[in-house]
Image (cartoon, rainbow, N blue to C red; front, top):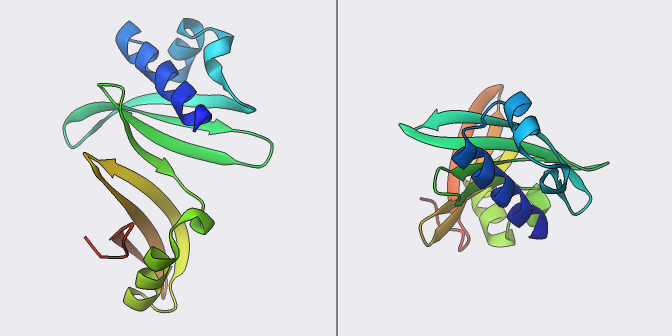
Length: 139
């Protein structure tokens, strides 16, 4: 969680200073803000998502690369999550809704007080996305 907190601080700083592409953010952010635990901020990009400005950032350590999205207000909107960290009940719902599908990517999405998992799957060569709450109920 410390990694996420450090990244949120860095992205909030970049947003408020107007730094968006990583080249700009790299100049604006001190090295101490780029480090969060043993992970290093790889890049930051400003983008529009549903008409709202947000930051997408990627950070990495020796064996983990994760991407997250932070809102203009500095709130964490989503973070890539290993499938192993998805609650068993949500995994079970995904298997029931899309039998035989392979997991491509999972995002933990924070929407107000609600939390759900956006599971990006592939079945028979076709992409499929499921949104499943922590309680295993589809959204």
